[in-house]
Image (cartoon, rainbow, N blue to C red; front, side, top):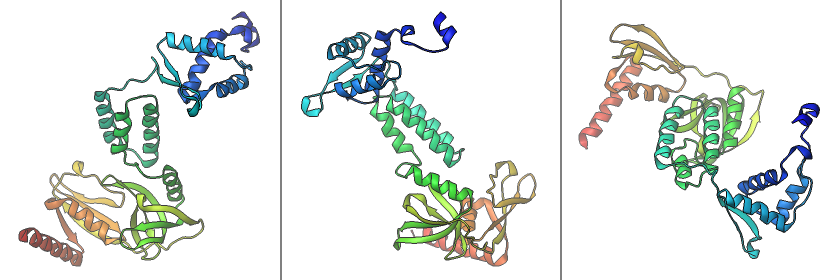
Length: 312
């Protein structure tokens, strides 16, 4: 301690090397199985150890680890003669009850955070899985993950394109027309019905559209300076039989009037489909006020739906 306080440097004389080497060996095997040659290379390249160890010395360290509860085996020569850490007293124990709790917390948090934060959350949860031998934990994460099966690098690239509102070309696997290139001015990434979409203005149709991220093969090209002229937006006024504190507005909506029972909302979007989807989502609690032609269109849509259900 006196030497450390004087020099502020860790030296050979300040360390219990028998204990340290055993812990260093543990860290190597916890990372992955390793052969005697690989272990020696790590010992020789360590900034403090800088020396190889004999096979007998290695057995001493393995015996020390086994005395504290580790189980280490050596694979066959045909498998590389590698030392494998099968389990240890430091292994993270996750019970089925805790797995269910993690799933509930994930589902709750994922509803209220952005895509970028969700990537960090999943990364943390999967790191815990790496320290646990409970395979059910990792399977559960994959089953509840909103990002499962989607390339994380692609998501991060799309987030960057949306941040800068770049015009990009998506190589897209369309369910109707197969693989095609779609030019779009990126706006945002959002979840809808637990599926991740990229929203933006379509160059081909000059309207606001969305595309399922899981169907994007790659970003085929990026034109940083390109800009699509903003399409004309449709404006609809609708009334909800709900108090304002029960209404969660979208970014393209604003309240125009309210009282104790009703909330009147104005919505703007260049894509009529998105507006209709929003109107119908409220069921019988919503009435379209204007424009008149769109109101009649909604009425006809509802009549057609009633006929379909009536026939069934």
